[in-house]
Length: 328
Image (cartoon, rainbow, N blue to C red; front, side, top):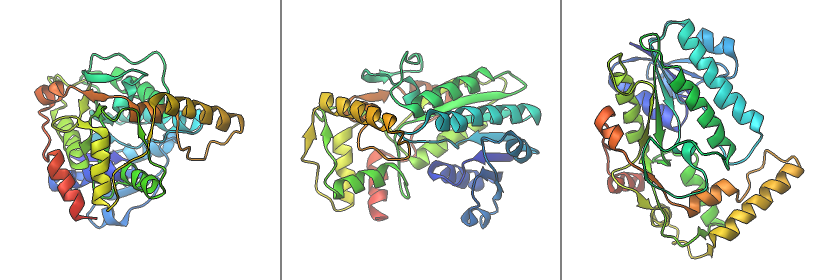
C-alpha cells in the first residue's frame, strides 16, 4: 500500500514514517523541505506547499492513503497564516484525495479544538466545540477537523481524526525546548495552584495510534467520520511533569509562581498590545491560551480510542521519561 504523510519531516511525522517503514509500507513524504535522513530509509520525498492545491494534487497521485500531519502551530500570529495552512491546506488534502480516489484519510488534530475557558476533566468525544476560542491554532484546527469528518463518505473516502495531547519525546523541537529555555532564563513560573491535571502522550504512542487508525479504516469500521482523544495511561500533574523534564536537563524545580488570573490578564494585555503594533512574528511570553493551558486541567477519556481503535500506550509515562533521560 502506498501511504503519503504530509509534514513527515516534523516531530510526529517522522515517528509515524518510521513505524510505516517497519510495517513495510511504501512511504512518501510531502513537505516544504527535503529530508535526506528519510530518503536514506527509502522514503520518497516530494517538496511542495500544502497551501498550493496544484502541489498537493500532483503529490497525491498514485497514493492509497494519506496521513495528514502538517500544520501551522503556535500561540500567536496572524489569523490568515493559521487559516491558510490549517484550513485551506486541509481542504486541498481532502480535494486531492477525492480527485485521485484515495480511500483513506487520517487527520492529526488536537484536543485544543474543544478547549474553551473551563477545566476539562475526563471529557469524552461528545464534548462540543466551544463557542469561543482563545487561540488561533485551536480555532483553525477545529475548522479543519470538521471538514475532515464531514468529508467521510463511505466508500468514496473514509476519514478519522486523532487528538494527541502535549506530545513529548526525544528530538522534540517545541514543548521541551521551550520549557528548558524559559527555565534557564529564569522566566518559567507556575501558573495557578499547581494542582491541575493534563494529558500528555509520548511521540511513539501517538504515532502508533495513527497506524492503528490507518489500518482500522474500512467501510464497516466504527471509526469512520469520528474523532478520538489520545494520551498516556493516566493524566499527570502538569507542574510535577514539567519539573521531571527540568530535572532530566539538570535544572531545579520551578519556585516562582503567578496566579492564573494575573497570567490570563497579562496574556490578554500582551495580545492587545502586539495586535495594535501589528507584531505577529514575535513569540510572546504569555497569551490567554497559554495561561489557560498552564493553569487549567485538561484531560480526557480514552475509552473510545481503546474500544474502537484498539489503542493502548506502548510505553508508559515513566518508561518514556526514563528513555528521554538517557538521550540527554
